[in-house]
Image 1: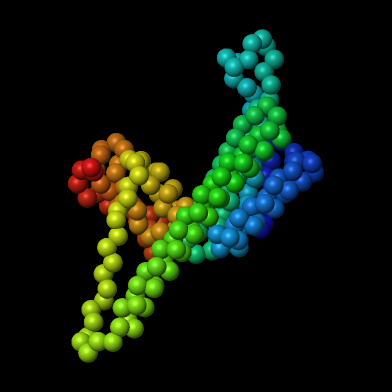
Image 2: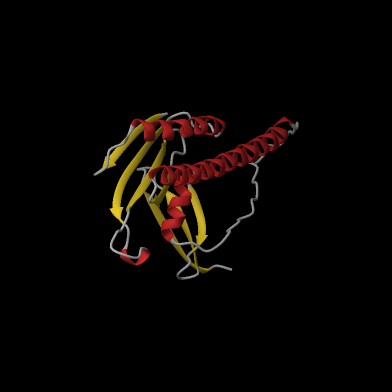
Length: 200
């Protein structure tokens, strides 16, 4: 796991770097279990003044914002992104790392489910191949249920596509209620097909 620290108008101290690196060690185990061993982490720290309406008086404290990007370089790829703000830098770091860990656990569960589904399909295919038959067998067609959890925006659909590593994702557009399909192009970019069908 390669870690890059970026400071925008603020310096990273050794204590802050050690704090982040200590927490990232936990991520290594979770990412290996999700079969992600090529990982790059970019942690960006920036500051701003708190908004006047949030604090009485003239003294507005400095607010620390932490953006954490974890780039997954293995097959399926994707990016895990989290950000947090706090007047205490260590509190902001702690919150953003907790959010990233939650996303990694979700990714790991999704990958395990995909592997389980893949093994089941493989067993079914092998079972049909080993059955002796004099006729030429046609390829097995496996019907899968389309599960669309909730309507989402096109941006959320592309993000979900990146995170899950699948090649296409049907979804109901939150604005129009139409069924659309987000897909991954060979060039690495993404496209959206509008079916003009209304989602149920």
